[in-house]
Image 1 (cartoon, helix red, strand yellow):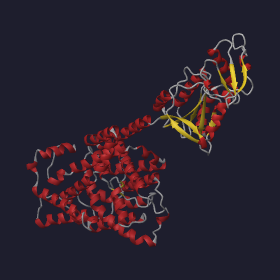
Image 2: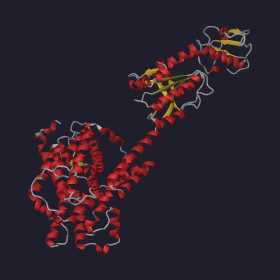
Image 3: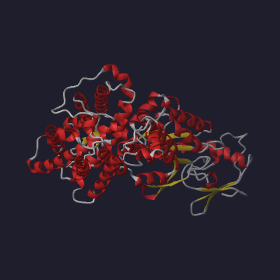
Image 4: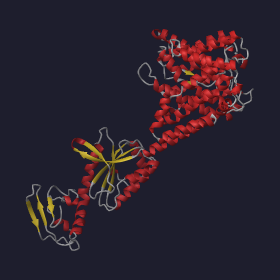
Length: 628
């Protein structure tokens, strides 16, 4: 936070960016308050107090903390059911709760959890919010007062009662929409909404249309700075759930800002510290009669495009709003309500991201279903509960994705220290070393799939399996149980299981679960080093030595007994094919001679018939009437 002190070289650009954003924030804040069903001044107070104070504590230098449609509509949904006399204090208490939750989330470094929020869920939720914003303002745009509370039902009732539309109100609304769309294509686009609202409201005064609702008709705009407001603790039980929902929305939207705008040093901001900044903004806003606010992608983009370089751009933005509200409170009261509704409707349509919707739709059927369910939940349920539906769906989506993301491959060693990946065999070869690599998370949902992919030791003799865990930071109890089971299956056929690429955390887990003591031995666990493949190479050498030194004689006897069970001629040849020695009378009847393998000369190996596993050195043998 070295830029807490204004830098002279950036002061001019920050002041201009703050002026632009401050002027833009005035209609946004008022519209958001109307969207929440509260006095527009509460939106203005939020950006007057919360925006500059929150900017002091964010890691992001440019994050603009302000009102957003998603937060506003969720706050409005949370206030449904409160008496009119309680709505204001309930709003301020809600804002304080949101701030407290966000600060705690930042202190606990929960920013890393944002990676688990599914994009499909967020697209479905924000699309639903955009539609709700549009539907919720149709009444103010047309002057039609619906008897329903659900926004979808309100729109349907309006369609069936078009004759009850108030012509003057609707005309002002349509004019505002047209002005915003037109000015968005000119050099005045940064002030399009403010100028359109001003022009439409002025026209209402000039035409003397007293039936068109104005801000002053809904609630008076106080002159002066907001007074301190303490929370009503008795309302906490009713507000905790929606406060968590709003905190989640604010944090997710803020994380989008954090990931989208680098700081001047070229580094991305700390998401958890940005949580603290947003929480501080809401704590301040709640204490001074403000509504909940959060990191705004649109406002941040405006600050950046207007030339903002440091956090002082957003501090100036709040100061600009303070000056305008103190000087022009009377002007705010004559703003036409249908003009504000038109602003929100345009903003709602502009926030629809059809490219994101298409991307999620085309990725696959599961993200598509998740997006649609979240969208429908947002339209049909109270918004705070739709948020929880989205959270649950995110968890399910991550769980399902992770459970499918498990893959087992066999590594084939190549010259030069390289490896080739291929599908592992269904069954393990006898007297052979096979190296397996596991890709994907090792938790209980994936272990069953991994168990099915492991080659079977049945009908095999003395196989050795090297399981490489290089890419894994920790394991679960389900995976430990799988290791115990697979090791027992290998031991049943005189085989062996070896783990490589094991980090200290996994080694500790194996020690604590007594897996090394009861199943694997210390010599069967190879710790990862800083050199890729080093522990696996050591494991392969150890596996070959184990096969040669401990299992070869018994294996030779068993295989020869299967071939003959009696005397057998053996030709011993050197690698160039020359006959080196012939033994025609060796007593291979193992029932009479248990040391039959001693008939083999020293420095003799087992032929390829026995899968090429070397017993001693390098000499090839052949058998009468047998394919070698």
